[in-house]
Length: 170
Image (cartoon, rainbow, N blue to C red):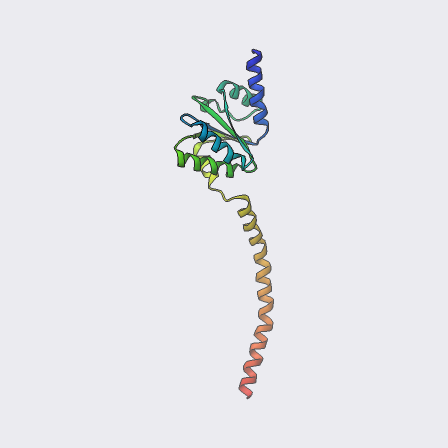
């Protein structure tokens, strides 16, 4: 392999090592200003947008034992990776595509799983990490709240009986 190609493969490989997921998109028709805006939005989620050569991406992905993405490596390809949660990054990409009708997702990988466009769309519909945490906290609190209500009901019931009895006697 020529040194410049080897360098490109290594560069793409460094990007792939940063993330447990990888989204591939067709960036055809996107302007420089739109690219900058997308990169800025992705950066808010600690994600990155890179235009890469398909051949270098294919070799780097194969070296890292990623699922076979060779079917997606046709035409202009950008990789989106990094970030804290894949679902948040997928939301940004789906919203950008709906707003601009550009940067169409081709597919991707999540750990050792191949993702289709539909998979990424479904991933984007997941609630955020904060929402999931609050839902879990709510589930954990529910039994305790119900237990307090049950324990409170016994004295309240006794008090109601005594009040009714005192009203009867009066």
